[in-house]
Length: 141
Image 1 (cartoon, rainbow, N blue to C red):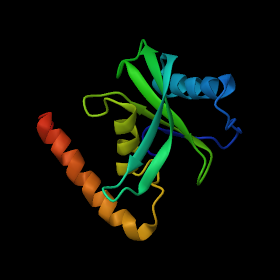
Image 2 (cartoon, rainbow, N blue to C red):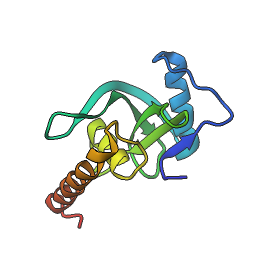
Image 3 (cartoon, helix red, strand yellow):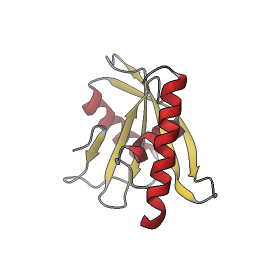
């Protein structure tokens, strides 16, 4: 199982963006990170290619984390394409926003992009270049 992903095989999560949805995300974060999450905000993310093609769009829930050894914040959303699952990405030097969390999830293969497979290789190459550039700027390479 990829880091930061929890598959929901025994449960059915609500697709609605209500209190139950946020509670399920919070429960997943609590189990994954062994900390106390508090919902902070919802951020809409629309990731596009340079040619203005949509790679991913949706709402990312931002949680503040209390008593977490690894991060002060977590980004989470539900993915329902292949299997119903919750994607979680911890805040870090590289992942400093909801948009970056989505980019990292796509780049690492945790979140499949919404593109046709013919376009996927070009997009992945561009994302690798962007990731390398960010690492160089932040002196992480």
